[in-house]
Image (cartoon, rainbow, N blue to C red):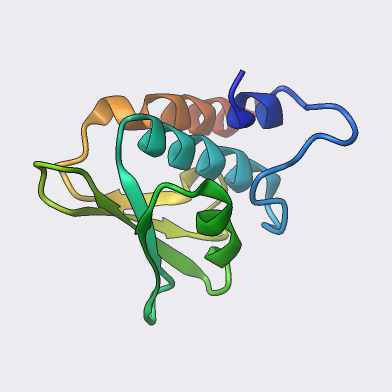
Length: 126
């Protein structure tokens, strides 16, 4: 079970909660799932906090989560060998719609689990 699955499934005491500093649990679960699925699909992920690039694309999830959520929005900067670089805009405070926009070169399959969580939360499924 991935860390995102563990977080989503309500992992027990002592379990590491990625991105635990984020204030909105719904957004946290969607973002953790998205980042883990990007990494699993072979993407490196960097972060721009809406003001400046704070992390070059890498495969280290804890480093990615550590620099996120310091402003009202983040751009996940995606890089994959043989593909054009892309981005995903996250706007904090949008609850289940935290994924605001993204470039079309990132396959929809990468978003499937995060979108399913978003739809579940939008329907009141906690």
